[in-house]
Structures are given as structure tokens and as C-alpha cells.
Length: 205
Length: 180
Image (tube, rainbow over all chains, first blue to last red):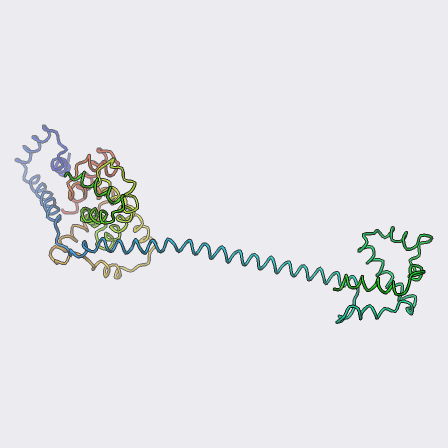
């Protein structure tokens, strides 16, 4: 065993009684061992001398107030994540709602545009009833009437929930023609005008 | 009134809502907390940071303290754990840090030890201590500075007495080599 190892064990009280006696005997006969022991005992004395170092007492006086201040700040800071979480959640919800609403409005606009283009391609008018006045069904030529006839058929199918076949059965029970004049036969002119007005009001207004 | 029963009364008063009892506990143990942290870190600023952390833990956990050990042992355990954790974090920070040494020396000039001769002596020993691995240093400080028995150190650190003796032995060997 090295001298330094023996010294450490000796000073730390880790030697048995026999080991201790043998070491002390060796110590009496060895100057290098005594020198080495002195080095370590001096170091240990130095450490013991460092136990009561004069320091600024103010530091220890201020230790508790400093802690209290920090604890107070920490308490305030603890509230912050709660507030931040609420604000973030509210903002996120608002943004999501905004996009959803915006998207729905756009879809509605597209649907309206699509429906309008399907129904009739006309210039916007202030009064829907004035629009219906433009249709003088009696004075229409055959081609014009056929165009409106197709339009009327598609509107009737949609509004009354009919199939094209059932519509043809209603409008032309004896033959397959969908002549507007055939449909209008026997129907009062004012009544026709009223039906048109009603349909146009439903679609446009 | 024994020290143990005094601590018991203080802890109970604190649990009962007496904030001044906490102040008294701190006043009683603040020097021990500070000097352990100081010897582990080798400078005042780091020691102060550990002290504040320890006080925060004490304040938050004291209501759960059940006197399974003495209050001193419990506080020392918190201080030792916090010191080791602090050093780990510091080493990690230094590893990834670009902080210049000049800034460090300016900060370390702040100290509560004003006497120049004492400060020089202290710094020499602190430097020597910092060359020992943290776990060995911890045992060395408890054994040499605080003169705790291996049984007490074992209670604080939760390590076996054999392991502690080995740690102390290696710490002393390192110090002897440094002194030669």
C-alpha cells in the first residue's frame, strides 16, 4: 500500500487497531511518511480554518426577503400561463370560426351563382315583378316559346319534384310534344302570368 | 428544548400558517446551505442561485415533511441534490455556450467575502476542490468541512457507507496529488 493511501485511511479513522499501531510505528521511522502526513494535516487544518470565514452579514440578513420577493414573482408568473392559454384558445376558436363562416358564405355564393345561371341569364333588375312583365307569352314566336318552355320544364321538375317522364305525362297525355301552346291551352292568361310571377319570385327573391 | 423538538415546533407552526416560522428555519440553516453550495460550485453567484432554489423547495415541500429524518438531514439532502443538479446543468450549458471567460471573471468578482487574504485562501481551496469529480467533492465537503459521519452522509445521499469511503479516499488522493 502506498504511503498516501495509508495516511488517508489513518486520518479518516478507517484503520483497525493493529493497522493503526503498525502505521504509527512506521511513522516514527520514516521522515518522508511524516512529511506527507504533515502536508495532509495542514490541508485539513486549513479546511477547518475556513469554517468561519468573515463574510458580508448583509447577504444572510437579506436571504429571506430576497426569497420572498422571488416567490412572489413566481406566483404572479404562475397566473400568466393560465391567461395566455385562455387568450390563445379564444383566438384559435375565433380564427377557426371566421374561416368556417367565410367558407360557408363563399359556398352559398357559389351555389346561388350556379342556380341563377341555370335558371336564366338576365340583367339584374330592381323589381322582380317588372321582370315578369317582360314576358308576353302570347306574342312570342315559336322558337322563343320553345326556349322558355324548356326552362319552365326544368323549373317545374325541380319545384314539384317530378321526373321528366311524369312531367310529359302531365303536360302531354296524348302525345310526346311539349309545345307551350298545348300546355297553355284552356288556361287563363292572367293565371299563367300569376304562375310565372310566383316562380320568378321564388327563384330570384 | 432539544434541536429536534425545536424544528418540529417550527415546522408545525409553518404548516399552521405561521410564515415567520419559515423565516426562523431559514435563519437556522442558511449558513450550512450556503457553504455547501459554495464549496460545490466554487463561487458566490452560483451558490446564491442554489440557495434560492433550495429555499423554494423547502417552502413548497415543508408541509409534506414527516420527520422520518431530522430536518437538518432533509435540508442537507435537498441542498446536496440541488447542487449536483446545478453543476450538471452548468456543465451542459458551458458545453454548448459561447460565453467568454472575461464575462465570467467579472461576475465572479461579486462575492460576500471581502477580506482579500481570506478570499485568496478560499479561492485556492475552491480551485483545488473543483478539480475533484462532483460526487467525490460532495462526500469530501460533508466529511471534511461539516465533519459528518459516514452514517449521516449515507442518510443524506442514500449511498452505501463502503461507496462513500471509497469516494472520500479518491478525493483525498486527488487533493494530495494536487498539493505535491
